[in-house]
Length: 176
Image (cartoon, rainbow, N blue to C red):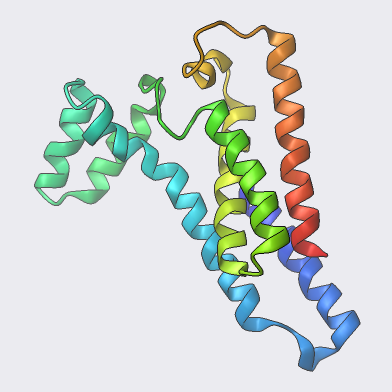
């Protein structure tokens, strides 16, 4: 789904540039930097699991297995273990509502004021990755571990839509 959003943003940017500036005015380098940034942001969302295995809960059995595979330089198997046991990790430092909302707000600020398509791509790639993972999560309470209280389904739905609206503002800012 994140790739769909990237494709949509890229197509709108290219069409807009072509209509306004013509074929010679297309910002090829800027659009490539945006795609590279998006990839970096997407990967940052995935590296959260690796960070958890090394720093947050290294005594957990699946984390020990991942570290052992990395020591043997078997990256593919380590990544497979991380993906297979992703549901076991409930207190990820980046996969939480607070981080997601902060990334969304920083995304708006970056897109509207920095002028860097690489940075814009990074925050938008990370933001879409986190938002779509958040929307797909069956046990939404895992995303609220950073708070000292339980969130109701109504509060969860409100946060979900606010986060989506913030991301939409970022996307609109990037294609304008």
